[in-house]
Image 1 (cartoon, rainbow, N blue to C red):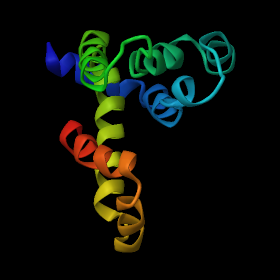
Image 2: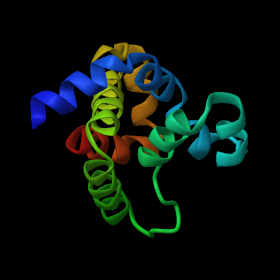
Image 3: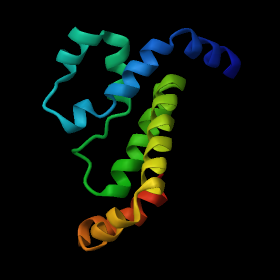
Length: 121
């Protein structure tokens, strides 16, 4: 069963790659799902929505837990997009320059968020 899901995902890499590139568009811009569907199609839009947080859920931990559950139910391709995003974020956090890290430590919100981000990823 898992091998079939993996093979199916490999057969559609363009959809997964497009969703990966667009994964934050709903969360970080004023773009709508309808606009995304018109420009990129239903499959890409479905994946992007699957990996988009539900901002109506209050609190970081419950929101992230809901996202993980939603992605798990959405299937293998959504899991691939989320995993790629997490790997990318961990690399970004690890490769952050010491000077940048030092400057960020002065911002209480970001300084307190960094350990939470690392724990989440």
